[in-house]
Length: 147
Image (tube, rainbow, N blue to C red; front, side, top):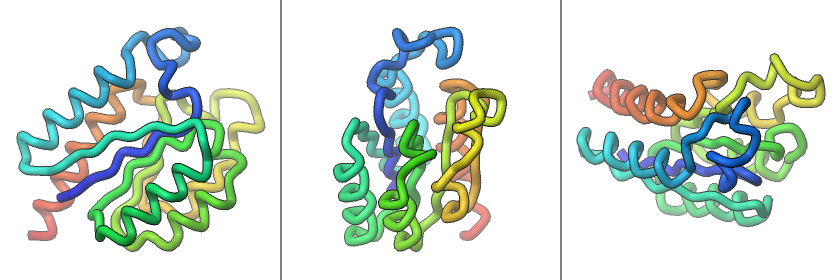
């Protein structure tokens, strides 16, 4: 299984940005852990992060073109604002998981609306940085169930 893990704005600041909400783990350490877990099950996990909406849309379009099996997306603030990311994900036929480190529904009301949720297969929220590795394991289990 080929998996893209796409991260939106400010996720590059994990470990230092509001650690009381997002924890102390860095995106680099999360990435290394997920790639390692993926390799253990024979999966190729590619991590990416951008503060730019258009770049995220291009990665999703690349995933369509390359027939990537799954996208895990933490669109961060773009979750609540981006119709462009919504439309790109809607065009992706593989498995899609929306991921949030915190639970947006326990935060400010503007975070309660997701433009991503209506076009994904599952939403994982509030598990902290561990949510990433849980999702990689979930995808491995899903693939086994389809074999």
